[in-house]
Length: 412
Image (cartoon, rainbow, N blue to C red; front, side, top):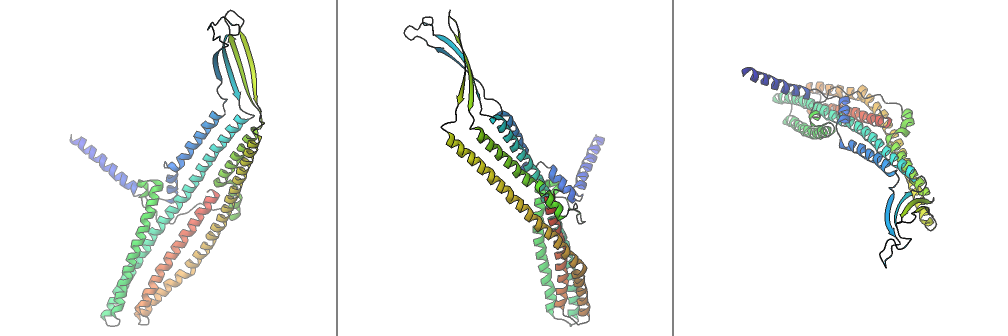
């Protein structure tokens, strides 16, 4: 009994600690993307179901209509109700088959298959959007995590400056205003941390929505992410026609073209075949074979307008595709400008602005210690370093976001 309890306790301990260890493994950006794609997202599964339904519908609607079987008593004498009295009285059995006009069945099947293709492409587009969203959510969470670290670091430095201010105030070299200024800035930074936590919680909720609650609560890695290499602007532009958003519209144009073809088929005559067999008692049986033709004579105006409407719908779909192509081109120009110009700003901040701000802060401290600067200048210099670090962090994240948008356009 003791061994059984010991075994159960050990298994429970290993299970709990195993769960904890997995939950504490840092979440990388590539892993986030993989988890977002593997999770059973209904917004993706719906396209598979619609495509499968349309493929089934393509088979169902491309079949011939069921033949019609009929049975009747023909020329039955009502005066005597004698079946054998009149030679024309007979039991008649017949079957008829209607044939759709022209290639209506084949065109209907092709239309449904194109609509299924539309749904498959929408699924691909949705998956590409999920990849972009997962990357941007991870980057947002990374920004607020790092912003909190920088703010806490600045808060500690301001607190250290508060100790200096109190020491100087004790010697009578400064006023109480310097000490109160430290309290004010410390409180302001604390309020800033609350706002950072609010945004971090929102980003964490978005992460949980993407990859599930268990993985969404894991901490993210501390290293700045390395995204896939982005192609040049010209290379991305060449591949834009293969973007799923355009391919979806190409499939819809093809669907509208099938509608035009179906409208043209309505000008053709429709056929129906029938055969019957008349059974008579003690007399020769009758057999009949016939064909009927539906002539499109009096409904030509309806067919003309139906054809015109289908052509206009196809033209409207082509215009919608042109609009989307222009939108992709605009997005490419905008994101490429963002990506390149932000890179230039980052270089300027890293090589010049941040270095000068740090030197200014150090100079302000030295000047204050030598009674050549006031405490307010020292505080401003320290807070300026924090602001510049936050700006630099924001620039790096914005450039990474611009890169994710370019990767979305290129399909990487």
